[in-house]
Amino acid sequence: MVADGKNINCSGKCHSIKLTMGEYLLDSPMIAIQMRGVDVVLGVQWLQSLGTMNFNFQELFLIFSQKEEKLSLEVSKGNNLK
Image (cartoon, rainbow, N blue to C red; front, side):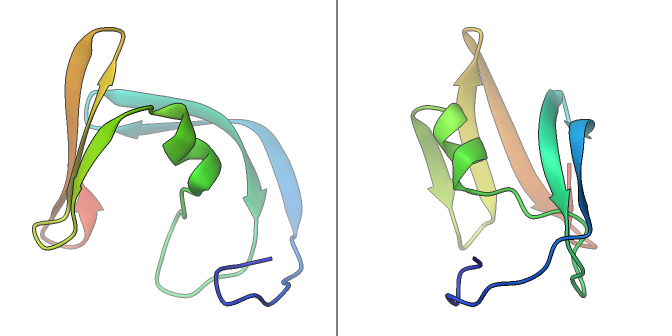
């Protein structure tokens, strides 16, 4: 089920995808679905794994701690995380 409450079909599941966002490395299972305009959607399960975090939806950044190190993910021009 997706955010609007509709169900969509998945094309398959990858069990260990490594995704680098700046200095952050995510190693996670991912489900393949057809979408337009985006490469990856990181869901609530991923957000829950980060613990306490700060979001700024106007400036589009996320700050969280991992292994006692403060990390920041920001959207740069072209809608890519830097």
